[in-house]
Image 1 (cartoon, rainbow, N blue to C red):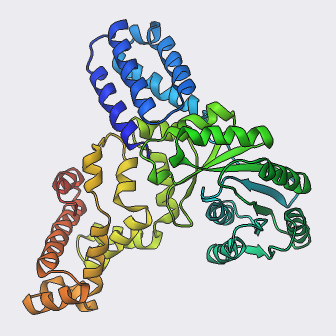
Image 2 (tube, rainbow, N blue to C red; image 1 turned 45 degrees about the horizontal axis):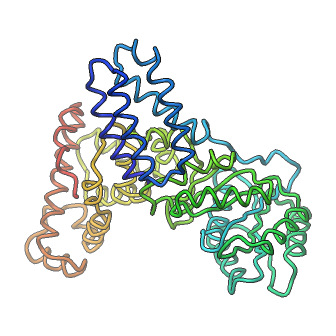
Image 3 (cartoon, rainbow, N blue to C red; image 1 turned 30 degrees about the horizontal axis):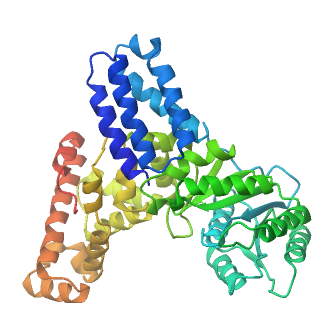
Length: 447
C-alpha cells in the first residue's frame, strides 16, 4: 500500500532536503508535486485542498525559514500533517462496558466483511484475551452463514448458529442473549451487504442496530475503491452512528487514497487495516506509523511488535547461543530463519518497515518471497544428516535433492553457496565483528 505515493513524495522531499534554505518559490514547487502525488493516489479533492493549505500555512512561516535544516523541517511538517489527516493516534475499540460488548459490522457486498469478522475475532481472542462469539445475520447471500461458521472454526472462536428463514434482528438478539448466559466478552455481528447503498439495506441495519445497541458499529470498506470508499462510508454514517472504519485489501492498493480520505470525510477513525488474506492479517491503524511509511521513514515500532509476537523465542535463543560460540550453524537453522521471515510477512513486508531503505518500486517488485519458499523446499528435500553436515552433499546427492524439490541442480548449488556465506558471517559476528558482518551481508540476500 502507498507504493506509488511513497515513491513520488520521496523524490519530491529528497530534492528539498538538499536545499541550503527554502524560499516561497521552491516550497511552492514542492507543494505542487505533493498535490499531484495525492491526486494520483486517488485522495479526495477536498481532502487534498485542506492538506495542502495546512502544510503551506506552516511551511512559509518562521517554522521552516528559520530552521537550520529547512528541508528536514518541511518533511517534518508533511509527516505531522499526514498524521493529523489520518487521525493523530490509534483509536482502540471501546470494550469498557458490561459484557457482552456487541460489535456490529456493516459494509457493501464484496468488501471482505465476513473474513474481516473472523480476523477481528482472532485479534480480540489472541491480542486482547477476549472470549468471542460470532454470528451471521446475513440471510440473503448464499452460504454466508456457513462461510462464517467455517472461518470461526479456523480461528478458534465460537459460532452462534442461524439460518436464512430467521429475521436478522431475532438472530442478533438470540446471539447476544446466548453470549450473556455463557459469559462471552464480545459478540461480533456480521450483517448483509448489498452491491450498492439502498434504502432497504439501510432500514434493515437500523433495525439491527436498535435491536442489539452495539458499543461499536464498524464500517468495513474495500480500500481499493479509493475515494469512493470514503464517500460510501459517509453515506453509511448518515444512516448509522458509526464509531469507526476498517479498511480491507490494503495490500492490493498501491495508491492509499482511501486511508487518506476516510477520516477527513466521515469524521470517524480508521481503527483497523487489513493487509492480506490470512486470518492474522489485521492490524490496528496507527496514523503516525503509516505517515512515516509513506515518507520512506519505515515503521520500526510495528516491526518490533511483530517480532515479539511472531518469532519463536526459544529458536532465537538457541541460534544466538550457536552464533556466540561460532560453531554449529547448520541448514536446519537456516531453514528456521526462512520460516521466521515468512511468519513476519515476508521480505517485502520487512523491507517496507525498515527506516531509511527507500527502495524504488521497481526494486521492491523484484523481491519475490517465492524464492524463499523454494529455498525451504530444497532444504526439506535433504536428509537430517545432510542438513546438519552440508559438506557431505556432493554431485549425486545434489541431483537427488534437486529432483525431490522440483528444482535444478544449480538451484541447490546456489543455496549451498548462500548458506556458506551466511555461516561465514555468523562466525564474524561471534568474534564481535557485527559491522564487518553487515558489510558482508550487502548484496548477498537471495533475491
